[in-house]
Length: 301
Image 1 (cartoon, rainbow, N blue to C red):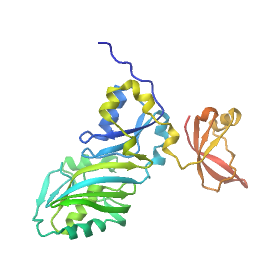
Image 2: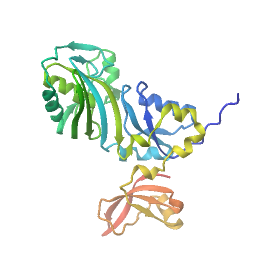
Image 3: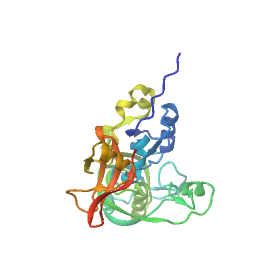
Image 4: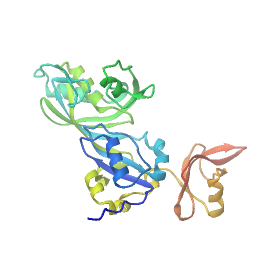
């Protein structure tokens, strides 16, 4: 049976429905080697247990990763009261088990509602956050002490979807970098019985929804369909103005030259496009010598 021809390197966004089980890096490696997409990245990892929207960046789209990592996300998850693990999810080693029968549904409703707001969240020891260049999970797996790291996150919406105690199903809207399993762990501490995350689905990673995503198995099984599944790079930045230039000015942008920025306020970020709407650069309107000009933030050629 002849070997399938791998697609050429694409330049754009693949909205992947990551399955539960593999790591995000593992999914990207499958696409990289089996579909020939050597230049590849993502806009926010998912834990192995989690599934759902993984925004995969291909080719020149890898250059806009920094502009996507700050977007808010929506998760649907499940937890179980009465158990605590070292990873805060069901895949970890159990560190404690406690009675949960004294907890009422009203208690759970209040504890989930208490997630909302701005808070300093402790980064789990088993996470991809780095210390001296090494992921924390590598240190934790070796039995080494992991430094306590915190980060400010914003939880803008948190609600219970259903309950059949000790199981609870919830939905939460969070800022970038928030760990949902840390929220579950904090809920267990607040209720005094411990809690562990049992499932998690990322339904939204700004600006992409789960209904736009394609499953990994299907993507790998249908390499000939990859081109039609890859969205244009600009689709990842729908709120950014588009500024179009003709061939002469496009050549100047390609050389990093600043061009006049009109009808915008200082600090505006925009995509500079050339003929055929080919992305040239991400730029910011910056006052220069008394005039507003497009300063190149990231070349996209």
